[in-house]
Image (cartoon, one colour):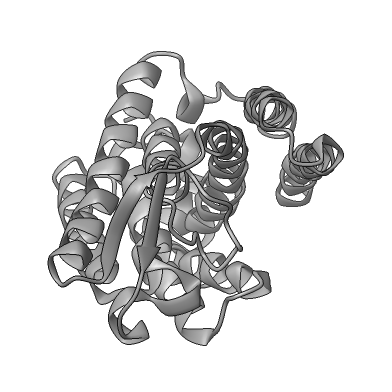
Length: 277
């Protein structure tokens, strides 16, 4: 039942945040406030429900190393997406025409903060962590990454390729970030930095969500097979390549640190979060 209670607790916060954003009716400052409040409340609720249902210290959200994890992840996410845009711009598929909407970027900051935190708590903090305790690292990584990709099928401009791309590049990379560090701060920062760069900075489509304009007035053109089309650059092979490279590095780090859990060890321990690293 811990799986059910933990998912339910975080989902309630996420739904309340979505309702708040809807009530803001596009006001960027209210959206910013609601988004940041949702992110903070989600962390508080996650810590509470995990302590209640598992009766252990919530080490994956320890304050120690939080700033480094969030900051490092944020910088890595922005740099990664910037590399994707640089390649598309080099080919002439991305062009900047001037300054876009500063207030639009402000609202997107809040929205992306709430999305990054609630999704990481749900998919890495709850689902991956608990499933890994049952199956070991590799099976849990594949299952939860596939589920993460499938959850994006509900976006307005999503399709099968978009879901597959998200499962591989985002599901794999963000889960690998959690495995390598055994904290949620790095994947939260990485998720937030990627989405922030995509929507608030470079003004591109984010996961087919009909994303409003961000800081730059920019346009995307060219073949969908390279640009990602209506789904956005996350459907580009450049995103797939760069994220796979980072995933490989993070999994190598996880292996070096002894953070990969084989099936037999998962069966014996039951929950990797109880292991002391």
